[in-house]
Amino acid sequence: MAKIILYMPTPTTDLLSYIEYGDQLNDKGNLSTYAGHRKNHQWIEYLLNTKNKEAIQIWYEPKTVINELKTISNDDQIYIRGHGEPGSEFIKTSKGGKELGHRFVVDRLRENGLPKSFRGKIKCYNCNSGSWLNGKRSFAQALADYMYGWGYDKCTYYGYRGKLDSYYKQGTQGVHKYIREGAWDVNQGICRARDGRVQIKPQALHPTQWESLSG
Image (tube, rainbow, N blue to C red):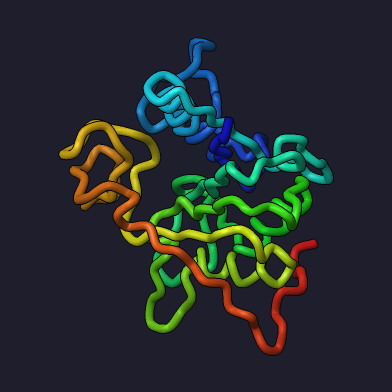
């Protein structure tokens, strides 16, 4: 069965990111139920319980090949998690957290074992990941260009325009992920997130600019 991989390009030791996206315990030792925490779990639980779809979260592990990436199916989808802005080649690993450039994200996927033969979808699920600004590349474009240069030329890349919900919620069209008006997930949705999704066509860079800067 095809699955969704929520890829966190940072280790679980990134505390702010782990509190927001991971399975961080609250001060009573229980799994947090606050809407702004455990955002990956909310995806996983919703898809399993309502659509019988498998979703897993994978956190970056230094110098480690992760089996779920190494053996990925061509029907699987990878969602890159984090916060983005228009015309930025960086994402933040959490609200108020550290910036991570597109090259680091790609290099970490490679380090964790993603094969170049992967033919599935890579979705930069970050606010405005598909939005250029004043001639500056979007994050999704920068990531696709860099991955393409490394030989990832069989998969399909996507970015998003607008501010994205981090998880499924009730909205004007039912329970979906939405593009919203304000900065927080509780704000009203304008349209479904998929309506702001755009396919990214990788550019062949001349001269080549894809050599790794991050190791």
